[in-house]
Image (cartoon, rainbow, N blue to C red; front, side):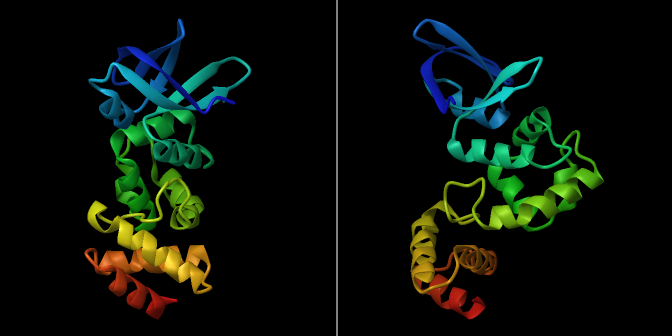
Length: 196
């Protein structure tokens, strides 16, 4: 299985990239998020999802592992194929998709081309627990600002070490951050304990 391809970026459009690795040009389908991450670079490392069917073999590429994991969660939902998942990641950022799932914001998800009411409902139903548990995300902080992400990570680790399950800790920390986005480490732990 191919995890990533690293090489010279020969071509780049909003929908695909051609990456030269030792004289072999890999045509990789990308989202707008990945395009923005690669734009202006001469060399790149693209994380790959290898899509193989009887009649076609495609590479879907992502600038980050985080985006690839979310893509894999999305295509695991019945009714969402690889192209629809790529459209979702082009329409909204990975964090916006996660936050829409957590907030059960059906209208935001429906605003994506190709997603109807039933698909949006199914997406939320099937992925809400996986997203809360940290699925499709490299970091524990699901929607914390960058400046306190270290505090969120420390608080989560501390609460898990106190004997709470990671899933419950992530839910509690997410709820604390929703109400108090700029909470300090101590506040996150104290407020998190009240919710556990």
